Image (cartoon, helix red, strand yellow):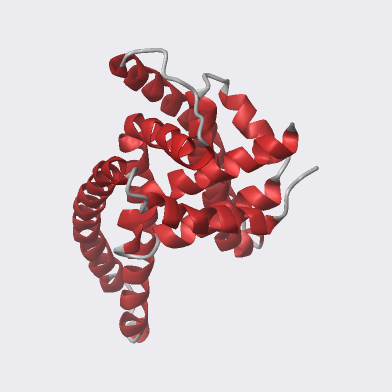
Length: 242
């Protein structure tokens, strides 16, 4: 039996409390630092490109459309900030991923009193984590291409913003709920099966993460919060599936 959408929201909200737990704080600072560095540098270079591209595009408009400058320039900047924040936030997650499995495992011990015991060295864990992230990218990229192609189809592309939003939510749900599965050395397909069986909860969790990721300053705190929330959601879904 699938769980309700509210379970995904509740798991994400509970993640805030768990990320502030005294016994877990030393796991939090590194992902936050990685997120801060990646987002600041990424947005700096993205803004530099966006300013140049926007100026060239506005300059190419015919004279009778020059009034669009005041409307389109701030709109393009806003879309650039929101889209860039989401993109670089996801990149920060991928870079910090080798350390997030340990955070998820520690959270399980604090919250539930038990967690899978590490059976390998830290270097082996980092290598396995990077391979796992590559596997996720192989899952994401074809779907990313498909969503992009949809935005090019006339009429259908009217729904493109909603499709992008749902795709982003699903991607983040997969990313953050997978850490407990990985810690148990179970296949990535098990995470996908669990989430597909509980799409409402997965999408509601992912929508919360997507919304937080697009809010400047708050997005720096997203990674530990979402890992905590994803771990809590995983435990709920596993209990339901059992």
